[in-house]
Image (spheres, rainbow, N blue to C red):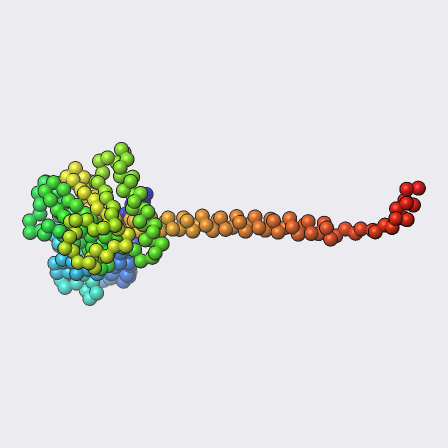
Length: 323
């Protein structure tokens, strides 16, 4: 199994190149898109080569997801805590984007290891913003409390017009995913994949990981949610996270894995589909080769039959041939 990485490799490469370029640099104005329709607009100017303006567009939120000034709960606080004086949030953001930030690379620490850590964190802006409400709820779980002013059921956006749901409690947090896919083949493969995923959780080696369940019907915790939000054609996946799963350094990893679970499943579904297509192509090629060999053997036999000549002998000639 392959886990998706949090930092945007494209954004991280641009940041590292600009830091190493010294005072030299060129104008940069580029757009890039990541999975689940997260879009970036990166701008550098030769007038001020150490200042980057980064705009981020998040997936289009569904009606049930609650945003604050266009951003998830706790996103502004998470940005300030992660980047400190390096980042300044611009209000309002640029047209077509949900967040615009100005980053002063001259305020990066001189120590190379610390500098690379902050650059990696900047390239992980997706996790910082979209994962902010999830991280807030799981932090309270680590202290065995419930975040104040939070509903019993929280909808968090993770894909365009799609959300997953959290039911926070003091001793556990239940996370539920309606699994939707566009292609009919993807639906079949994802259903099989998720069933095997749940079965794998029951092995002894995975005893300490969060419990996992899959069902075709919505979990009872989603009672009262609109039908559009529960329109799942590959069933529902439920994880139950306990305080031991979010202690210390486990928190960030748990947040990212939960935030990108649907993308993780989609990735492996597409890999499985590609693998099966490759196997089918190889099988067809081997059958074609077998047919070609059979055809070649038949042609050789035909030449042997029609290539020789036979002389018809009469009875008289046959008798003479004995003397």
